[in-house]
Length: 298
Image (cartoon, rainbow, N blue to C red; front, side):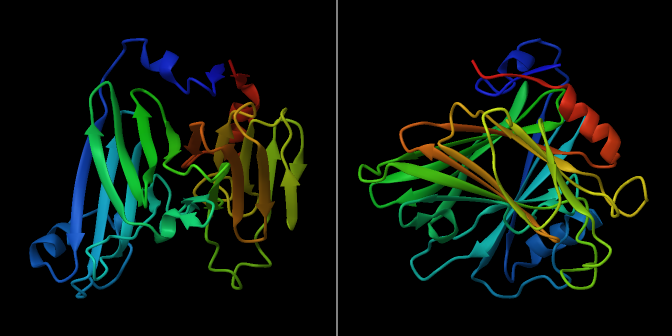
C-alpha cells in the first residue's frame, strides 16, 4: 500500500469512486436554550460536559466530517473575551473518546505566538468528493491557518498548516497530544495497569522516553498493551505520519499517560500531516497496517 506524504491522499481522491463526504456544523452558546436542546440530542460519546454551560461568554463548535468509513467529530470550545475574540483549539470527540485529545490535540507555536492564545474562526466549509474546513488564528500582520480534510472512502485525516505575516520568525512547531486507546481511569488511577508503547517504522519504545525521529521514521503508532481492543478495555491505537523532507526537527515524548509529538517546519513552508484513529482495531492489526505502508515523499 502506497501513501504520499507530500501530496497526502490527493492521488487516492482522484480515483472517482465517490460515495461522498458530509459536513455538519453545530454551534453551542452558553445559556442558549435552543443550542442546549440540540446538544442534549447528540450521541453520548459526543458530549463533554454533564451540565450545559450557563456562562454566556462560552462558545463551542462541533464540525463532523463523515464518509462510509469514518466520522470525525472535531470539537472547539472556549470563551469569547471582552473584545469579541474567541480563543480555542481543535480536539476530537470521535471516532474515539481517547486518542487525539478532545479538548485540544493541536497547537501551533510560531515565535511568541500560540494558537491557544489567538483569536480563532472556522470557515471554508466543503463537502462532496472530500470534506474539509479551516481554522484561522489572527496574527498582528498575518494568520495561522489549519485546513482539515477527510477524503472520500478513507479513514484518515489530513492536516495542512501554514503561517503568514511573520517576517521575523524562521520556523514554527506543531504540537500534537494523544492519550493512546484509553484514559485508563486518569493519571494516577490507571498508572500501574497502563502499558503505553510507541512504534515507528524501525523501532519501538516504552515510557518514559523522549525520541528524536530520523528520516526513516515518517510515522509513529501509539498504543497501549493492556487497555486495548484485544483485552476489551481500550478503544484502539492511533497514529501520525509526516514528511521528513518537510520537517526541520521531529520528536516524540511518551509518558505512562499521554504522548506528545513535536514537528518543526520552516515558516515559509506548508506542513502536511496525516492522523489515524484506529477505533475498535486491535494493536496487532494496526501495527501490521502501518508497517505495510510504502511512504512516498516526492
